[in-house]
Amino acid sequence: MNESIKKEFILANDVTIPCIGYGTWQTPDGETAVRSVEAAIDSGYRHIDAAAAYENEESVGEGIAKSGIERSELFITSKLWNSERGYQKAKAAFDKTLSDLRLDYLDLYLIHWPASPSQFPDWEEINLETWRAMTELYKEGKVRAIGVSNFTPRHLEALVKTEVVPMVNQIEYHPGCMQEETVSYCRKYGIQIEAWSPLGTGRVLSHPLLLELGKKYGKSAAQICIRWCLQNQVLPLPKSTTPSRIIENIDIFDFEISGSDRELIDCIGDFGKSGLEPDSIDF
Ligand code: A2P
Image (cartoon, rainbow, N blue to C red):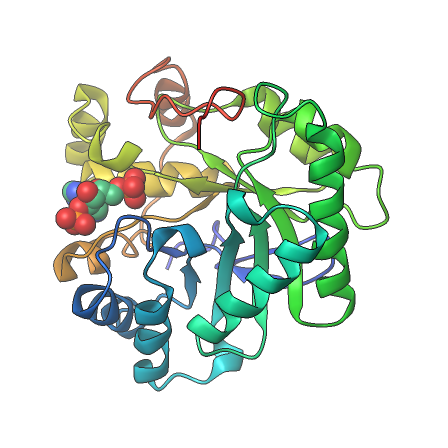
């Protein structure tokens, strides 16, 4: 194993988080989700990234239960969906997610998307009320760490002034989408960045530079993306329902991308972005 990468990150509240997570977005509910989660845990993933909006949490929970791995060895994240913002609704949504996942605590709970000014005149208040519920769940010990997803500095500004600063911000991050402003803002406040769509949902995998670097390092373009994330101190959450790719995506600890090659990837420029912007989403 290459020693320059630790297999964990430490969050601001000293909670240890496995440095790569298995994503479950767009994983079909039912047998596919159950089998994929089991396969991921069997392949060595100890961190599963779920969300109520993925509409597969019961199956993800079944996969976790079937894995036979002790709960304390797993790190399970879920996210609060947009329709459940606000203090009361957030608390009820958390209980449903916990029961769907068949768990009695979560390791990490995130606000999936910020309420934004284009949708709500009182967006800041909504985010703060939701955050109040998250903070309470954290203080009650129902979740070991709390954070947000898709928040930019404008949405984070109010939250970082509260008693509990978010520990994580999960954003779109892959070669071609680096969100520098958000990343540097989060670093200033000790907020760990996680990458959703670290492979650009497959869109970036045909980029000639990634293919060329794959050849150079004897790895696939997907492995280059995942390793590049990690070397940038960003926690990747690759998703696959294909058993061989599930294994491939965690087989990234035996090589290191050189500084100059990382810079080449950093310089790809805008490429393969989802186009989802927190201030213009309509969901
Ligand atoms: P599949 O689930 O059919 O294996 P992201 O994590 O960026 O959202 O990307 C997920 C997409 O990339 C899925 O369509 C997934 O397909 C595909 N994918 C995941 N891992 C790999 C891989 N190692 N090589 C090629 N495609 C992959």
